[in-house]
Amino acid sequence: MKINKTIQVNAPAKKVWEVLYTNYGDACDWASTVNESKERKVSGSDYIGRTCSTVFGDVSEIIDRADAATMELQYHLDDTPFIMKAATAKWKVKSLNKDTSSVTMDLDVTLATVPGLLMGWMIKPKMRKDIYQTLEDLKYYIETGKQSEAKIKSDQKYFSKKNKKAA
Image (cartoon, rainbow, N blue to C red; front, side):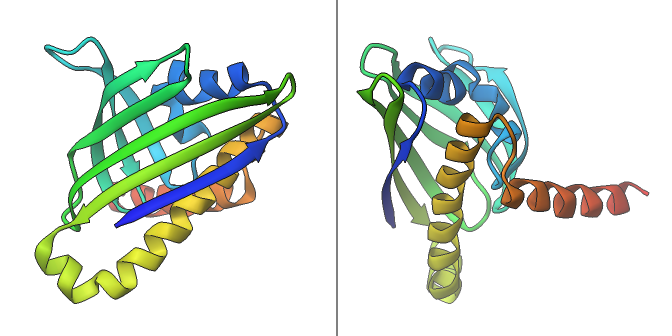
């Protein structure tokens, strides 16, 4: 399954790149699909990774490539939820003018065979909707410095469930 989406952000490209790459481990600050995240070292790699608790389950990611000059970032999931076999995300930030940027995300996901066959009709539209929302979350966070309403609701739901399990 491939998802490709471009949005326009009313902010300089450098600011967008800072949120996406410089603060890579902090995706939980802005993405409604990521409730917890932290940066991690990856042995044998020049790049870092991150672990995330997401709406799809816990994931672990490793950056494959990052180019600050072209503002391109690519990472893959090295530990996926049961519904996924593999996933790679490519981000590109482009300056449109000094105060406006475009952000493109290309996501390539291979669903695990059994979940894909049994639930693909349900998983694919939800995943597409969630990825589109993630881009809107990014835009809102960069433009306002605040979390989107979707992010706030997602965290409330996630942490409410997590606190009940811990009790």
